[in-house]
Image (tube, rainbow, N blue to C red; front, top):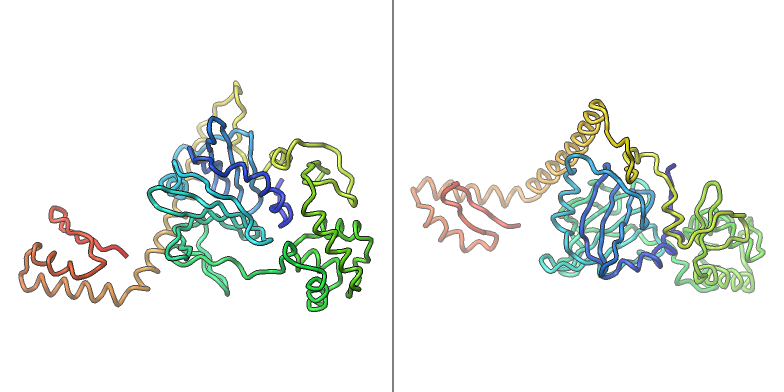
Length: 366
């Protein structure tokens, strides 16, 4: 089944994913366009991180079979992340965004950013002059307030209210400003979602249809939120949900040792090539193999089209600069200048890299 993590789920999950800090990327699998397995080592311990965009992220014990040929985005991640280390794992504000801060000896600080709200995205950024620049992403996206495309600055979505930082006075003001009833204010404006909004109201003994709060009620609500967020993880499940803490408003049954373990029981609809260890009947039919190859090739073509579009956008953005360079080069060749003379002239251009005389090419770095 498809599964969706709320902002508070990401909050609790981050507490457990901190175990990844200091771990080294070893192998990366891209099972399908949106499902990834990151194999890491921390000392002698093996850790497998599963990411399904935009649905779920968790440490997994499940085994997966990769496509016969790695997809383009998987190859890109392998190139940039293999043998790098996770320096820090954190939630952005109180959003459904998880950030993996990465230490790379070759490339400096990088950031793998997972957006768990629809349409979702997995983005690799590099830090330049205190700005995050997108190196690549599963999806090239453009919204009214921001753009997620290669070579552009990455910006987090506009900030919502952050219950981690709010006091009772700020809660009262935010509720009045929202003009929503208390239940919807907690679920939407504060990002708790319907299930946890009901839990907070049940623990606070408040009316979810209220549109105002007294100072005393606001203090009670603030205290309830703080207590919920500081509660020790005690994971259980219902027929539809994995719950990281004990709930007053919901009855649960199965118990798990961790939130990650609970989430690992979630079966994803699109995961159709799970490999059972020591399974005798592991062979696929010829037709199944052809379908798998065609699906992998389709995803690869989509990635190649996205890269071509990014290249076109970059050329268009720097059209005047490219045009001037080409005109200058044509003029020098027209005057019969040698490659040595052209190289000497181009050294004044800060973006000039080198001339390959054998291939008759000139390289610039932007």
